[in-house]
Length: 313
Image 1 (tube, rainbow, N blue to C red):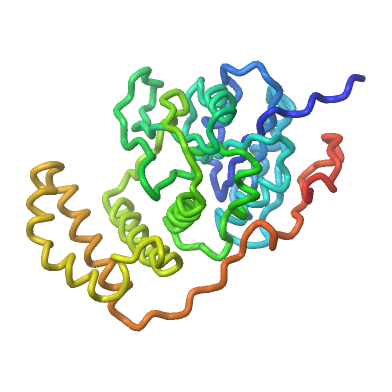
Image 2: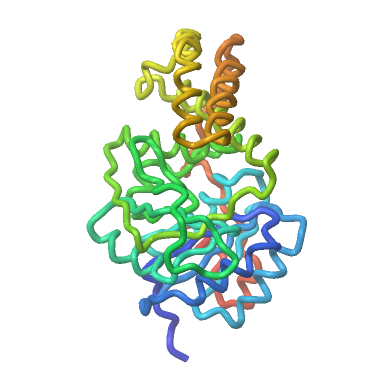
């Protein structure tokens, strides 16, 4: 039997309790308009539902090698992402999330654009039940010091240079902002590619939406403290005081441009920043990057004919 061709690009899905949505994402990946050999790595961060069994059940029929990692040793999306990086066999890597849905052109766009760019990002579209050829854009996920790591293409050499993801960042929202901050400090150049788009699943409840905003704003403050040289104007109580003085104009502008939902976002943002910045700051945990990661086991590697040692390389 001929040897399996080496993948030209590795796709990594970090997942925790993603059973309700994972099948839809796997279907989208299986239908990619891409002819080169590639591999899919599902990095299971200790799911307690049927996520792992679902991934295992799809392995035999999936069009490319589908590898499953037991990344349960430590909770956090960055731990799962780093485990996937260590296991990946290709020099180009693309990240997506279990609860979204990639475009049919997603993988081809990442593969082609990573020839000329270190990082590829793409638009996030509002997910609809039926696939819409022109869905509304939620955001483009590209601007100074921002990144959507659930829709990211990147060269492996760039990941190695940046140190991968910081495992010490566990709060919701901090992972993407912190990684982006290191990208911009290192001068990494990225590109916005429309074909590298995803359908993004919005929070269904208003309470869930508000909680995500609150947590993301607390995370922002953590990143500002971790990288003060990159955010010199956002340090200490002076920043909160300046924002408070501009509170009313911000509210009016937000309400005019986006209605009540946008105005509520402004209120929550200022409140979260104040809560995070006004009390005496506690010491942040030391960064823990890719070089501190342990090897993680691959689930069912023997049956798939995969060498376990490769996961740690």
